[in-house]
Length: 275
Figure 1: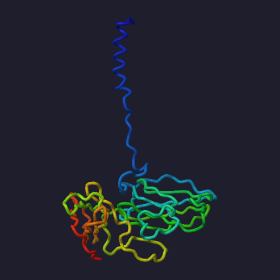
Figure 2: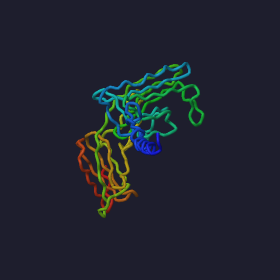
Figure 3: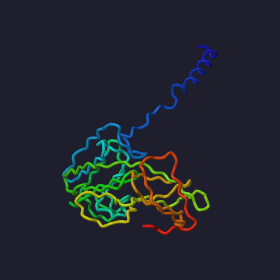
Figure 4: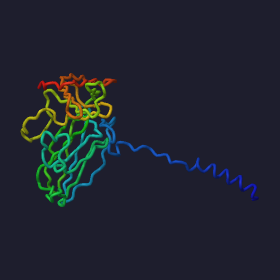
């Protein structure tokens, strides 16, 4: 083949290479096989969870299936904590690190699991497999914190529970300061007027709380804040980022998300707390 023929041929090959060896198409991983990175959601169909190996003689296997109360279908994106102590009310949203044995968000098959062995210990060297009761805490945005008994940490045992819960709808607010500007990083609380966080199981009374457990969020830079709450009657407590200009009101939430956020205007002088 002559050089005159070879050069055009090479040029054609080089031009064709990008079309043949361009970026490889990759499919987006399915939520069923990954930890949910978005908000919590109920699976549209029942997805079988992975098969788990049985615990050995020196292991305890904890398994939690988080499912929707209404449909029984798995919930993905729910925060699950396996804790060694019952959290105090103020820590039901996010338990103290020292109390957490394991934490993860559920994939869409709704199953979380962890194995403990006789060497598992906390930062102080205290063994986790102590024969004592452990608890599963389901929490995160979209859920009323729910605590259930996970079973005692006994070597060679499998402790499996199904946790029935529900995802709440979203209520959105936009906070303005006394001067009419958007109140970035405003301190915002939407707490049930009567209901307390749900705790189930044979755990006895833990005392009462203010009803504000895990109910406070910071507004973003645009003054927007959102809450996952079921329909009901709520106490709103909003203030500027420094705690000034406090606003209080009773808010009846219908559980239907509006296309526009509810406007909240902070007063020039803090209101007296009405409850």
